[in-house]
Image: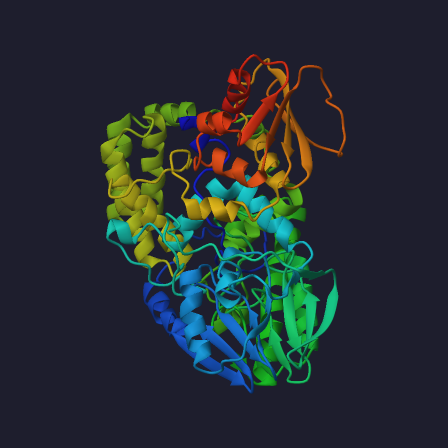
Length: 598
Protein backbone atom coordinates (compact mmCIF):
# COMPACT_ATOMS: atom_id res chain seq x y z
CA UNK A 1 0.00 0.00 0.00
CA UNK A 2 1.91 3.04 -1.23
CA UNK A 3 -0.20 5.41 0.80
CA UNK A 4 0.98 3.81 4.03
CA UNK A 5 4.42 5.31 3.56
CA UNK A 6 2.93 8.77 3.30
CA UNK A 7 0.35 8.46 6.05
CA UNK A 8 1.29 10.54 9.11
CA UNK A 9 5.07 10.13 8.90
CA UNK A 10 7.08 12.33 6.61
CA UNK A 11 10.87 11.85 6.85
CA UNK A 12 12.15 12.09 10.37
CA UNK A 13 13.62 15.56 10.11
CA UNK A 14 15.28 16.65 13.31
CA UNK A 15 14.79 19.64 15.45
CA UNK A 16 17.58 21.88 16.53
CA UNK A 17 17.86 25.21 18.07
CA UNK A 18 19.16 28.73 16.94
CA UNK A 19 18.77 32.28 15.12
CA UNK A 20 20.78 35.72 14.66
CA UNK A 21 21.82 39.62 15.43
CA UNK A 22 22.90 43.20 14.61
CA UNK A 23 22.55 46.44 16.56
CA UNK A 24 19.93 48.85 17.94
CA UNK A 25 19.00 52.47 18.92
CA UNK A 26 15.96 54.35 20.10
CA UNK A 27 12.93 54.50 17.80
CA UNK A 28 12.31 58.12 16.99
CA UNK A 29 10.38 59.57 14.10
CA UNK A 30 13.23 59.53 11.57
CA UNK A 31 13.67 56.21 9.78
CA UNK A 32 17.20 55.39 8.69
CA UNK A 33 17.09 52.57 6.12
CA UNK A 34 19.20 49.66 7.30
CA UNK A 35 20.09 46.73 5.08
CA UNK A 36 20.99 43.20 6.11
CA UNK A 37 24.25 42.87 8.10
CA UNK A 38 27.24 43.49 5.86
CA UNK A 39 31.01 43.06 5.80
CA UNK A 40 31.26 40.02 8.00
CA UNK A 41 32.51 36.94 6.14
CA UNK A 42 36.04 37.31 7.56
CA UNK A 43 34.65 37.67 11.07
CA UNK A 44 32.59 34.52 10.61
CA UNK A 45 35.67 32.61 9.46
CA UNK A 46 37.55 33.81 12.56
CA UNK A 47 34.66 32.72 14.76
CA UNK A 48 35.42 29.09 13.84
CA UNK A 49 38.25 29.18 16.39
CA UNK A 50 35.52 29.07 19.03
CA UNK A 51 34.86 25.45 18.07
CA UNK A 52 38.36 23.99 18.10
CA UNK A 53 37.75 20.34 18.82
CA UNK A 54 38.83 18.97 22.16
CA UNK A 55 37.95 18.35 25.79
CA UNK A 56 38.59 21.25 28.16
CA UNK A 57 38.97 20.76 31.91
CA UNK A 58 37.08 23.64 33.47
CA UNK A 59 37.92 22.85 37.09
CA UNK A 60 38.38 19.73 39.21
CA UNK A 61 36.04 17.06 37.90
CA UNK A 62 34.28 19.24 35.31
CA UNK A 63 35.03 18.72 31.61
CA UNK A 64 33.42 20.01 28.42
CA UNK A 65 33.71 18.47 24.94
CA UNK A 66 33.69 21.19 22.27
CA UNK A 67 33.58 20.93 18.47
CA UNK A 68 32.34 17.36 18.09
CA UNK A 69 28.78 18.42 17.29
CA UNK A 70 26.58 21.48 17.26
CA UNK A 71 26.24 21.39 21.05
CA UNK A 72 28.80 20.72 23.77
CA UNK A 73 28.63 17.77 26.13
CA UNK A 74 29.65 18.32 29.75
CA UNK A 75 30.94 15.63 32.12
CA UNK A 76 30.90 16.05 35.89
CA UNK A 77 33.06 13.45 37.61
CA UNK A 78 32.00 12.25 41.05
CA UNK A 79 33.31 9.75 43.56
CA UNK A 80 31.91 6.61 41.94
CA UNK A 81 30.56 7.77 38.60
CA UNK A 82 29.97 10.62 36.21
CA UNK A 83 27.06 12.87 35.24
CA UNK A 84 26.55 13.75 31.58
CA UNK A 85 24.91 17.09 30.75
CA UNK A 86 23.57 17.23 27.16
CA UNK A 87 24.39 14.48 24.69
CA UNK A 88 24.71 16.02 21.16
CA UNK A 89 22.40 15.49 18.18
CA UNK A 90 23.45 11.98 17.15
CA UNK A 91 24.87 8.78 18.49
CA UNK A 92 27.77 9.02 16.05
CA UNK A 93 28.89 12.35 17.50
CA UNK A 94 28.24 11.19 21.06
CA UNK A 95 30.51 8.17 20.53
CA UNK A 96 33.40 10.46 19.67
CA UNK A 97 32.78 12.45 22.83
CA UNK A 98 32.50 9.35 25.00
CA UNK A 99 35.77 8.00 23.61
CA UNK A 100 37.48 11.17 24.82
CA UNK A 101 35.78 11.10 28.21
CA UNK A 102 36.83 7.45 28.62
CA UNK A 103 40.45 8.58 28.40
CA UNK A 104 39.84 10.69 31.52
CA UNK A 105 37.90 8.21 33.64
CA UNK A 106 36.35 4.77 33.40
CA UNK A 107 33.74 5.54 36.03
CA UNK A 108 30.19 4.59 34.96
CA UNK A 109 27.52 7.08 33.99
CA UNK A 110 25.25 7.65 36.97
CA UNK A 111 22.86 10.19 35.42
CA UNK A 112 22.10 12.22 32.30
CA UNK A 113 20.72 15.76 32.36
CA UNK A 114 18.95 17.46 29.45
CA UNK A 115 19.14 21.24 29.73
CA UNK A 116 16.21 21.50 27.28
CA UNK A 117 14.35 19.78 24.47
CA UNK A 118 16.37 20.78 21.39
CA UNK A 119 17.61 17.89 19.28
CA UNK A 120 21.30 18.75 19.54
CA UNK A 121 21.17 18.16 23.30
CA UNK A 122 19.26 14.89 23.56
CA UNK A 123 19.72 12.41 20.69
CA UNK A 124 23.06 10.91 21.75
CA UNK A 125 21.91 9.75 25.19
CA UNK A 126 22.02 6.00 24.53
CA UNK A 127 25.73 6.16 23.84
CA UNK A 128 26.22 7.08 27.50
CA UNK A 129 23.50 4.69 28.70
CA UNK A 130 23.07 1.95 26.07
CA UNK A 131 20.31 0.18 27.96
CA UNK A 132 18.54 3.39 28.91
CA UNK A 133 18.83 2.37 32.54
CA UNK A 134 20.18 5.51 34.22
CA UNK A 135 18.18 8.41 35.65
CA UNK A 136 17.54 11.15 33.08
CA UNK A 137 16.77 14.58 34.52
CA UNK A 138 14.82 17.31 32.72
CA UNK A 139 12.10 19.89 33.25
CA UNK A 140 8.60 18.44 33.50
CA UNK A 141 7.56 20.03 30.18
CA UNK A 142 10.54 18.81 28.13
CA UNK A 143 8.94 15.63 26.81
CA UNK A 144 5.81 17.48 25.71
CA UNK A 145 7.97 19.89 23.71
CA UNK A 146 9.76 16.96 22.05
CA UNK A 147 6.46 15.28 21.18
CA UNK A 148 4.99 18.48 19.70
CA UNK A 149 7.87 18.81 17.27
CA UNK A 150 8.14 15.15 16.36
CA UNK A 151 4.41 14.50 15.93
CA UNK A 152 3.07 17.81 14.63
CA UNK A 153 5.76 20.00 13.03
CA UNK A 154 8.56 17.62 12.06
CA UNK A 155 8.46 18.01 8.23
CA UNK A 156 8.47 21.80 8.08
CA UNK A 157 10.85 22.26 11.02
CA UNK A 158 13.18 19.66 9.52
CA UNK A 159 13.46 21.32 6.11
CA UNK A 160 13.84 24.79 7.62
CA UNK A 161 16.43 23.56 10.13
CA UNK A 162 18.52 22.01 7.37
CA UNK A 163 18.35 25.31 5.51
CA UNK A 164 19.52 27.22 8.55
CA UNK A 165 22.36 24.90 9.50
CA UNK A 166 23.61 24.44 5.93
CA UNK A 167 22.94 20.71 5.79
CA UNK A 168 22.26 20.84 2.04
CA UNK A 169 25.39 22.79 1.13
CA UNK A 170 27.99 20.06 0.76
CA UNK A 171 25.93 18.16 -1.81
CA UNK A 172 25.78 21.37 -3.85
CA UNK A 173 29.51 22.04 -3.70
CA UNK A 174 29.47 24.61 -0.90
CA UNK A 175 30.80 24.44 2.65
CA UNK A 176 29.56 25.43 6.09
CA UNK A 177 31.96 27.96 7.63
CA UNK A 178 30.44 27.29 11.05
CA UNK A 179 26.94 27.40 12.49
CA UNK A 180 27.57 30.23 14.92
CA UNK A 181 27.14 28.17 18.09
CA UNK A 182 28.91 25.05 16.86
CA UNK A 183 30.95 23.80 13.90
CA UNK A 184 28.05 22.12 12.06
CA UNK A 185 25.07 19.86 12.58
CA UNK A 186 26.50 16.38 13.18
CA UNK A 187 24.23 14.20 11.10
CA UNK A 188 23.10 13.70 7.52
CA UNK A 189 19.83 14.91 6.05
CA UNK A 190 18.49 11.40 5.47
CA UNK A 191 18.98 10.60 9.14
CA UNK A 192 21.28 7.67 8.48
CA UNK A 193 21.22 4.74 10.86
CA UNK A 194 23.10 6.18 13.80
CA UNK A 195 21.14 9.11 15.14
CA UNK A 196 18.25 8.17 17.35
CA UNK A 197 19.55 7.64 20.88
CA UNK A 198 16.94 9.60 22.82
CA UNK A 199 15.98 8.38 26.30
CA UNK A 200 12.77 9.67 27.84
CA UNK A 201 13.33 11.70 31.04
CA UNK A 202 12.71 9.73 34.22
CA UNK A 203 13.16 12.49 36.85
CA UNK A 204 11.36 15.77 36.23
CA UNK A 205 10.58 18.87 38.28
CA UNK A 206 8.82 22.23 38.12
CA UNK A 207 10.99 24.90 39.73
CA UNK A 208 14.10 23.68 41.58
CA UNK A 209 15.47 20.21 42.27
CA UNK A 210 18.27 19.53 44.76
CA UNK A 211 20.08 16.30 44.05
CA UNK A 212 23.33 14.58 44.97
CA UNK A 213 24.71 12.21 42.33
CA UNK A 214 28.02 10.39 42.64
CA UNK A 215 28.85 12.60 45.59
CA UNK A 216 28.30 15.86 43.65
CA UNK A 217 25.73 18.30 44.98
CA UNK A 218 23.66 19.86 42.18
CA UNK A 219 20.81 22.32 41.88
CA UNK A 220 18.65 22.03 38.79
CA UNK A 221 16.85 25.34 38.29
CA UNK A 222 14.04 26.02 35.84
CA UNK A 223 15.30 29.05 33.90
CA UNK A 224 13.13 29.98 30.88
CA UNK A 225 15.10 31.58 28.08
CA UNK A 226 15.84 30.19 24.65
CA UNK A 227 13.18 27.58 25.47
CA UNK A 228 10.38 27.49 28.02
CA UNK A 229 11.72 24.23 29.49
CA UNK A 230 15.33 25.44 29.85
CA UNK A 231 17.11 24.49 33.05
CA UNK A 232 20.49 25.54 34.39
CA UNK A 233 22.73 23.28 36.43
CA UNK A 234 24.42 24.91 39.41
CA UNK A 235 27.20 23.33 41.46
CA UNK A 236 27.15 25.59 44.54
CA UNK A 237 30.18 24.06 46.23
CA UNK A 238 32.40 24.59 43.18
CA UNK A 239 30.65 27.78 41.92
CA UNK A 240 30.18 26.17 38.50
CA UNK A 241 27.23 27.32 36.37
CA UNK A 242 25.97 25.37 33.36
CA UNK A 243 23.54 27.80 31.66
CA UNK A 244 22.38 25.55 28.83
CA UNK A 245 21.44 27.71 25.85
CA UNK A 246 20.61 30.82 27.85
CA UNK A 247 24.03 32.28 27.02
CA UNK A 248 26.68 31.53 24.37
CA UNK A 249 29.27 33.63 22.56
CA UNK A 250 26.95 35.18 19.97
CA UNK A 251 23.93 37.45 20.03
CA UNK A 252 21.12 35.33 21.45
CA UNK A 253 18.63 33.57 19.26
CA UNK A 254 15.61 35.56 20.40
CA UNK A 255 13.99 34.27 17.22
CA UNK A 256 15.11 31.35 15.10
CA UNK A 257 14.52 31.53 11.36
CA UNK A 258 13.72 27.83 11.22
CA UNK A 259 10.53 28.77 13.08
CA UNK A 260 9.50 28.68 16.72
CA UNK A 261 6.83 29.68 19.16
CA UNK A 262 7.32 33.10 20.67
CA UNK A 263 10.30 33.11 23.03
CA UNK A 264 9.45 35.30 26.00
CA UNK A 265 12.55 37.50 25.87
CA UNK A 266 11.65 39.42 29.02
CA UNK A 267 11.68 36.14 30.96
CA UNK A 268 15.02 35.38 29.35
CA UNK A 269 16.48 38.69 30.56
CA UNK A 270 15.17 38.04 34.08
CA UNK A 271 16.67 34.55 34.03
CA UNK A 272 20.07 36.03 33.23
CA UNK A 273 19.73 38.42 36.16
CA UNK A 274 18.96 35.48 38.47
CA UNK A 275 21.91 33.53 37.09
CA UNK A 276 24.13 36.54 37.71
CA UNK A 277 23.14 36.61 41.39
CA UNK A 278 24.57 33.12 41.88
CA UNK A 279 28.11 34.50 41.68
CA UNK A 280 29.57 31.83 39.42
CA UNK A 281 33.32 31.48 39.07
CA UNK A 282 33.07 29.03 36.16
CA UNK A 283 30.60 29.33 33.26
CA UNK A 284 30.18 26.30 30.99
CA UNK A 285 27.67 26.98 28.17
CA UNK A 286 26.22 24.18 26.09
CA UNK A 287 27.57 26.05 23.06
CA UNK A 288 30.93 27.85 22.64
CA UNK A 289 33.81 27.81 25.11
CA UNK A 290 33.79 27.99 28.93
CA UNK A 291 34.75 31.07 30.91
CA UNK A 292 36.69 31.27 34.17
CA UNK A 293 36.62 34.24 36.56
CA UNK A 294 33.75 35.76 38.51
CA UNK A 295 34.29 39.28 37.18
CA UNK A 296 34.24 38.29 33.51
CA UNK A 297 31.23 36.01 33.99
CA UNK A 298 29.35 38.78 35.78
CA UNK A 299 30.07 41.12 32.86
CA UNK A 300 28.92 38.58 30.25
CA UNK A 301 25.66 37.78 32.04
CA UNK A 302 25.06 41.49 32.64
CA UNK A 303 25.49 42.67 29.05
CA UNK A 304 23.64 39.64 27.69
CA UNK A 305 20.60 40.42 29.82
CA UNK A 306 20.85 44.14 29.04
CA UNK A 307 20.94 43.51 25.28
CA UNK A 308 17.87 41.28 25.43
CA UNK A 309 15.94 43.75 27.56
CA UNK A 310 16.98 46.66 25.34
CA UNK A 311 15.59 44.93 22.25
CA UNK A 312 12.38 44.16 24.11
CA UNK A 313 11.91 47.59 25.66
CA UNK A 314 12.71 49.62 22.56
CA UNK A 315 10.45 47.43 20.41
CA UNK A 316 7.55 47.92 22.80
CA UNK A 317 8.32 51.64 23.02
CA UNK A 318 8.17 51.91 19.24
CA UNK A 319 4.98 49.87 19.08
CA UNK A 320 3.36 52.27 21.50
CA UNK A 321 4.47 55.15 19.27
CA UNK A 322 2.57 53.58 16.38
CA UNK A 323 5.51 52.13 14.43
CA UNK A 324 5.10 48.80 12.68
CA UNK A 325 7.47 45.83 12.65
CA UNK A 326 9.24 46.87 9.43
CA UNK A 327 9.94 50.38 10.73
CA UNK A 328 11.21 49.05 14.04
CA UNK A 329 13.44 46.40 12.44
CA UNK A 330 14.99 49.12 10.27
CA UNK A 331 15.77 51.51 13.13
CA UNK A 332 16.43 49.66 16.37
CA UNK A 333 20.14 49.08 17.00
CA UNK A 334 22.11 48.11 20.07
CA UNK A 335 23.87 51.01 21.76
CA UNK A 336 27.64 51.06 21.11
CA UNK A 337 28.76 49.53 24.42
CA UNK A 338 26.58 46.48 23.72
CA UNK A 339 27.08 46.35 19.95
CA UNK A 340 30.85 46.11 20.39
CA UNK A 341 30.83 43.43 23.07
CA UNK A 342 32.45 40.16 21.89
CA UNK A 343 29.57 38.09 23.29
CA UNK A 344 26.95 40.05 21.31
CA UNK A 345 28.21 39.69 17.74
CA UNK A 346 25.75 38.54 15.04
CA UNK A 347 26.95 34.96 14.82
CA UNK A 348 23.59 33.42 15.71
CA UNK A 349 20.73 35.84 16.30
CA UNK A 350 20.17 39.31 14.85
CA UNK A 351 18.49 42.39 16.26
CA UNK A 352 16.13 42.91 13.27
CA UNK A 353 14.81 39.33 13.47
CA UNK A 354 14.44 39.69 17.24
CA UNK A 355 12.53 42.95 16.91
CA UNK A 356 10.05 41.36 14.52
CA UNK A 357 9.55 38.45 16.90
CA UNK A 358 8.86 40.72 19.88
CA UNK A 359 6.36 42.72 17.80
CA UNK A 360 4.60 39.56 16.64
CA UNK A 361 4.67 38.11 20.16
CA UNK A 362 2.69 41.06 21.48
CA UNK A 363 0.50 42.11 18.53
CA UNK A 364 0.55 39.25 16.02
CA UNK A 365 0.89 39.53 12.24
CA UNK A 366 -1.37 42.56 11.61
CA UNK A 367 0.61 45.79 11.20
CA UNK A 368 -2.34 48.13 11.66
CA UNK A 369 -2.55 49.09 7.97
CA UNK A 370 -6.04 48.30 6.72
CA UNK A 371 -4.84 47.29 3.25
CA UNK A 372 -2.97 44.35 4.74
CA UNK A 373 -6.13 42.81 6.18
CA UNK A 374 -7.02 41.06 2.90
CA UNK A 375 -4.07 41.75 0.56
CA UNK A 376 -3.99 41.04 -3.15
CA UNK A 377 -2.85 37.50 -3.85
CA UNK A 378 0.91 37.31 -4.39
CA UNK A 379 0.72 36.21 -8.00
CA UNK A 380 -1.84 38.86 -8.95
CA UNK A 381 0.15 41.54 -7.19
CA UNK A 382 3.32 40.46 -8.98
CA UNK A 383 1.63 40.38 -12.39
CA UNK A 384 0.27 43.89 -11.94
CA UNK A 385 3.55 45.31 -10.68
CA UNK A 386 5.47 43.73 -13.55
CA UNK A 387 2.99 45.25 -15.99
CA UNK A 388 3.29 48.66 -14.33
CA UNK A 389 7.10 48.39 -14.63
CA UNK A 390 6.99 47.88 -18.38
CA UNK A 391 7.00 44.09 -18.51
CA UNK A 392 9.27 41.22 -17.51
CA UNK A 393 12.27 42.38 -19.55
CA UNK A 394 12.24 45.79 -17.85
CA UNK A 395 12.06 44.23 -14.39
CA UNK A 396 14.85 41.79 -15.20
CA UNK A 397 17.02 44.64 -16.51
CA UNK A 398 16.39 46.67 -13.39
CA UNK A 399 17.31 43.69 -11.24
CA UNK A 400 20.55 43.20 -13.15
CA UNK A 401 21.35 46.89 -12.81
CA UNK A 402 20.76 46.73 -9.05
CA UNK A 403 23.02 43.72 -8.73
CA UNK A 404 25.81 45.46 -10.64
CA UNK A 405 25.31 48.61 -8.56
CA UNK A 406 25.93 46.70 -5.34
CA UNK A 407 22.34 46.24 -4.14
CA UNK A 408 21.82 42.47 -4.21
CA UNK A 409 18.87 42.66 -1.81
CA UNK A 410 16.79 44.76 -4.23
CA UNK A 411 17.93 42.62 -7.13
CA UNK A 412 16.68 39.50 -5.34
CA UNK A 413 13.35 41.16 -4.54
CA UNK A 414 12.84 42.16 -8.18
CA UNK A 415 13.67 38.61 -9.25
CA UNK A 416 11.08 37.37 -6.76
CA UNK A 417 8.50 39.57 -8.46
CA UNK A 418 9.15 37.82 -11.76
CA UNK A 419 9.17 34.36 -10.20
CA UNK A 420 5.84 35.02 -8.48
CA UNK A 421 4.31 36.38 -11.69
CA UNK A 422 5.52 33.47 -13.78
CA UNK A 423 4.95 30.70 -11.21
CA UNK A 424 8.67 30.15 -10.76
CA UNK A 425 9.35 29.30 -14.40
CA UNK A 426 11.59 32.22 -15.35
CA UNK A 427 15.08 30.81 -15.78
CA UNK A 428 16.73 34.24 -16.10
CA UNK A 429 15.05 35.38 -12.88
CA UNK A 430 16.21 32.23 -11.09
CA UNK A 431 19.78 32.77 -12.24
CA UNK A 432 19.77 36.42 -11.27
CA UNK A 433 18.27 35.74 -7.86
CA UNK A 434 20.87 33.04 -7.25
CA UNK A 435 23.64 35.54 -8.06
CA UNK A 436 22.11 38.08 -5.69
CA UNK A 437 21.81 35.52 -2.89
CA UNK A 438 25.42 34.47 -3.34
CA UNK A 439 26.47 38.10 -3.03
CA UNK A 440 24.43 38.48 0.16
CA UNK A 441 25.95 35.28 1.53
CA UNK A 442 29.47 36.56 0.90
CA UNK A 443 29.00 39.66 3.03
CA UNK A 444 26.90 38.57 6.00
CA UNK A 445 28.55 37.65 9.31
CA UNK A 446 25.47 35.63 10.27
CA UNK A 447 25.85 31.91 9.51
CA UNK A 448 22.11 31.21 9.56
CA UNK A 449 21.51 33.85 6.89
CA UNK A 450 24.56 32.70 4.90
CA UNK A 451 23.43 29.07 4.93
CA UNK A 452 19.91 29.99 3.89
CA UNK A 453 21.09 32.27 1.07
CA UNK A 454 23.40 29.61 -0.35
CA UNK A 455 20.87 26.80 0.02
CA UNK A 456 18.28 28.75 -1.95
CA UNK A 457 20.90 29.72 -4.54
CA UNK A 458 21.85 26.08 -5.09
CA UNK A 459 18.19 25.12 -5.46
CA UNK A 460 17.60 27.93 -7.99
CA UNK A 461 20.64 26.78 -9.96
CA UNK A 462 19.33 23.22 -10.02
CA UNK A 463 22.33 21.87 -8.11
CA UNK A 464 20.23 20.46 -5.26
CA UNK A 465 16.61 19.37 -4.94
CA UNK A 466 14.72 19.97 -1.71
CA UNK A 467 11.49 18.11 -1.01
CA UNK A 468 9.86 20.83 1.06
CA UNK A 469 6.84 18.66 1.88
CA UNK A 470 8.71 15.49 2.75
CA UNK A 471 5.79 13.31 1.60
CA UNK A 472 7.86 11.21 -0.79
CA UNK A 473 10.61 10.16 1.58
CA UNK A 474 10.95 6.62 2.83
CA UNK A 475 11.05 5.98 6.57
CA UNK A 476 13.96 3.76 7.56
CA UNK A 477 13.63 0.90 10.08
CA UNK A 478 15.80 2.89 12.50
CA UNK A 479 13.49 5.87 12.21
CA UNK A 480 10.46 3.68 12.78
CA UNK A 481 12.03 2.23 15.94
CA UNK A 482 12.65 5.77 17.15
CA UNK A 483 8.99 6.67 16.58
CA UNK A 484 8.00 3.78 18.84
CA UNK A 485 9.58 5.57 21.80
CA UNK A 486 6.71 8.08 21.74
CA UNK A 487 3.28 7.41 23.32
CA UNK A 488 0.78 6.13 20.79
CA UNK A 489 -1.62 8.99 21.55
CA UNK A 490 0.87 11.52 20.20
CA UNK A 491 1.13 9.55 16.99
CA UNK A 492 -2.65 9.41 16.62
CA UNK A 493 -2.95 13.12 17.36
CA UNK A 494 -0.64 13.79 14.43
CA UNK A 495 -3.37 12.42 12.17
CA UNK A 496 -5.48 15.56 12.70
CA UNK A 497 -2.90 17.81 11.04
CA UNK A 498 -2.55 15.37 8.15
CA UNK A 499 -6.25 15.21 7.26
CA UNK A 500 -6.84 15.99 3.59
CA UNK A 501 -9.63 18.62 3.51
CA UNK A 502 -10.69 17.80 -0.05
CA UNK A 503 -10.90 14.05 0.45
CA UNK A 504 -12.71 14.42 3.80
CA UNK A 505 -15.34 16.94 2.65
CA UNK A 506 -18.77 15.63 3.63
CA UNK A 507 -17.33 12.61 5.48
CA UNK A 508 -18.82 11.65 8.87
CA UNK A 509 -17.07 8.50 10.02
CA UNK A 510 -15.31 7.26 13.13
CA UNK A 511 -12.93 4.42 13.87
CA UNK A 512 -11.96 3.00 17.24
CA UNK A 513 -8.34 1.91 17.66
CA UNK A 514 -7.47 -0.58 20.39
CA UNK A 515 -3.83 -1.11 21.36
CA UNK A 516 -3.74 -4.22 23.58
CA UNK A 517 -0.01 -3.94 24.35
CA UNK A 518 -0.58 -0.51 25.93
CA UNK A 519 -4.13 -1.18 27.17
CA UNK A 520 -5.37 1.98 25.43
CA UNK A 521 -8.38 2.78 23.24
CA UNK A 522 -9.02 5.83 21.04
CA UNK A 523 -11.73 7.04 18.71
CA UNK A 524 -10.83 9.08 15.63
CA UNK A 525 -13.91 10.86 14.31
CA UNK A 526 -13.72 12.60 10.94
CA UNK A 527 -16.49 15.19 10.83
CA UNK A 528 -16.55 16.94 7.46
CA UNK A 529 -12.89 18.05 7.12
CA UNK A 530 -11.99 17.91 10.83
CA UNK A 531 -10.51 14.91 12.65
CA UNK A 532 -11.09 14.69 16.40
CA UNK A 533 -9.14 12.20 18.53
CA UNK A 534 -10.81 10.99 21.75
CA UNK A 535 -9.13 8.82 24.36
CA UNK A 536 -11.64 6.25 25.54
CA UNK A 537 -11.79 4.85 29.05
CA UNK A 538 -11.26 1.13 29.41
CA UNK A 539 -14.50 -0.75 28.92
CA UNK A 540 -16.12 2.10 26.97
CA UNK A 541 -18.76 0.85 24.59
CA UNK A 542 -18.73 1.84 20.96
CA UNK A 543 -20.07 5.32 20.47
CA UNK A 544 -21.81 4.49 17.18
CA UNK A 545 -23.51 1.29 16.04
CA UNK A 546 -21.52 -0.39 13.33
CA UNK A 547 -18.40 1.66 14.09
CA UNK A 548 -15.15 0.17 12.83
CA UNK A 549 -12.97 -1.22 15.61
CA UNK A 550 -9.30 -1.84 14.82
CA UNK A 551 -7.18 -3.92 17.19
CA UNK A 552 -3.40 -3.79 16.77
CA UNK A 553 -0.34 -3.52 18.98
CA UNK A 554 1.10 0.00 19.04
CA UNK A 555 4.50 -1.13 17.76
CA UNK A 556 2.87 -2.93 14.81
CA UNK A 557 0.77 0.15 14.04
CA UNK A 558 3.91 2.29 13.78
CA UNK A 559 5.41 -0.28 11.39
CA UNK A 560 2.27 -0.19 9.27
CA UNK A 561 1.92 3.56 8.95
CA UNK A 562 5.63 4.04 8.27
CA UNK A 563 5.67 1.37 5.56
CA UNK A 564 7.77 -1.20 7.43
CA UNK A 565 4.90 -3.68 7.12
CA UNK A 566 2.15 -3.96 4.52
CA UNK A 567 -1.53 -3.76 5.38
CA UNK A 568 -2.70 -6.72 3.25
CA UNK A 569 -0.33 -9.18 4.92
CA UNK A 570 -1.00 -7.72 8.37
CA UNK A 571 -4.73 -8.20 7.84
CA UNK A 572 -4.22 -11.71 6.52
CA UNK A 573 -1.99 -12.93 9.36
CA UNK A 574 -3.92 -11.28 12.19
CA UNK A 575 -1.39 -8.60 13.08
CA UNK A 576 -4.29 -6.19 12.69
CA UNK A 577 -7.93 -7.15 13.13
CA UNK A 578 -10.99 -5.20 12.01
CA UNK A 579 -14.49 -5.56 13.40
CA UNK A 580 -17.72 -3.67 12.86
CA UNK A 581 -20.27 -3.12 10.14
CA UNK A 582 -17.99 -4.20 7.30
CA UNK A 583 -18.02 -7.02 4.82
CA UNK A 584 -14.34 -6.46 4.19
CA UNK A 585 -11.54 -4.06 5.17
CA UNK A 586 -12.04 -1.68 2.27
CA UNK A 587 -13.80 0.92 4.42
CA UNK A 588 -10.87 1.05 6.86
CA UNK A 589 -8.38 1.54 4.04
CA UNK A 590 -10.56 4.27 2.58
CA UNK A 591 -10.66 5.94 5.99
CA UNK A 592 -6.86 5.88 6.26
CA UNK A 593 -6.57 7.36 2.79
CA UNK A 594 -8.14 10.54 4.21
CA UNK A 595 -4.86 11.16 6.04
CA UNK A 596 -2.46 11.03 3.12
CA UNK A 597 0.02 13.87 3.41
CA UNK A 598 0.02 14.65 -0.33
